[in-house]
Image 1: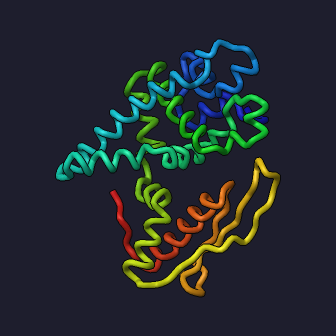
Image 2: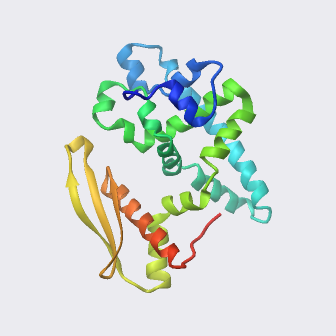
Length: 237
């Protein structure tokens, strides 16, 4: 864990106190840590992630079933997949700064593991699994409702940002747009990219990320927020 990021602080952020705090510790433990410390591999988050994935699927399916009574099965499946995909869960994890609480091995730490979406999204599911084992379905559902199924319009706008922006600008407005890389800095294993998106010559937004693609996604999201303020409507749940 990063300095100052304790189990108690995370419990405060999620609004849930574990009866068995060892479950939360396991949910935050990456395999690189158990390998370096020569700890039983069963003590990393992978089994809890497996369980949390199943719990999340049930809760999100129930949510969509009741909130969209006229949507057919195929569309519900697509909606659920986009809600619980890796970028979406990583987006949710950022709100909690979940990456700062993970126990990582030195190698994974030095290569930017705390910010890697594949890890933070897995830990998000592992935390769901830990809460389910500790407090049952009601507690797990409360966590999912608060941190995954809330503010869906903005989350959908974020993880569909590049395709939504392209559809709006090229499809509806018939405008050309492009991304420009403004800055690339940092060591090879932990680079930072700054990208700006333009509609013809007009700047619509800037984004920063650990990859050029992530920076473009953030820039597209800022552009969509700007265009939404001007009255444009996008797809939503």
